Length: 169
Image: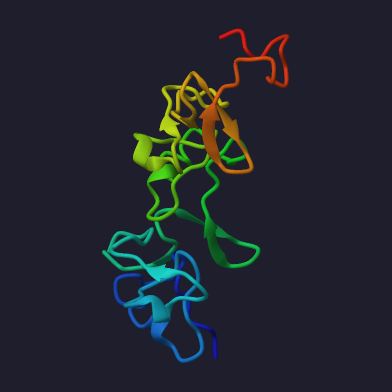
């Protein structure tokens, strides 16, 4: 027997792969279909809705909106939202509005303060990469504390750790 093809290379996508993902012990991988629910997909993939690469309105296995697929582990991983993201031009635009996963200091692209953790605000075209994204930041008179992951008032007296450069503002 030849294994059934469940991706865009199937010879008859209109009719031939409709039962692909519900084969006993052979759930579909990322981008394969036609699935009916998450049980038809491997690992932590979900069943999408009319999202297959072919145009017959089939449902294919996919990651959640705030995740990316890792070919090596065949699982969905949280999306990278800082300057290490592999495609900053297009890949992180929905990063900070992931349910329950707001962005940290220096991460983006945020749209408002609700997209940032704790007391951070959403900046304006301030990310460390050059595509005009908005990243989470502290107010002008505050400094970020990595330990507490919050913005603290800037020290402006003799206790400031860097009196030469740090308390000019």
